[in-house]
Amino acid sequence: MESRSVRDELRAFVAERDWAQFHTPENLAKSISIEASELLECFQWSPDADLAEVRDELADVLTYCFMLADRLELDVDEIVRSKLERTREKYPVSKARGRSTKYDRL
Figure 1 (tube, rainbow, N blue to C red):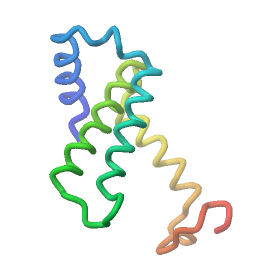
Figure 2 (figure 1 turned 60 degrees about the horizontal axis):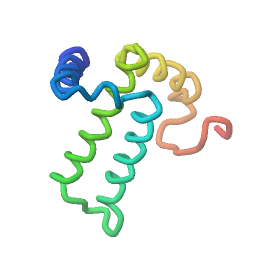
Figure 3 (figure 1 turned 90 degrees about the vertical axis):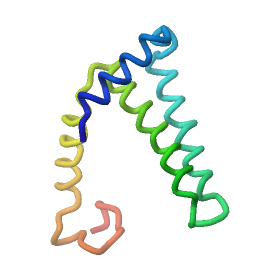
């Protein structure tokens, strides 16, 4: 994942349009939820969603996620790796492999 280059491109895009003034953490979090709903809508009536639509909606979700992380001065790679490490502890391979059971019931 090229977090740094994507972050820089998004910063430039926003700066060119003077949109940072609208990008409060609250507004960005709302936008993530809205775009995630639009992604889910791709699968509303069929598990066979149009891949082009899914790509566009997923890109919107990721864009707002990157922008929120940037606004909060969080390193995307670091927070994902940190969360992954905590999740590894909750779901050890020996107990979780092939199972969808919640960690407190393993």
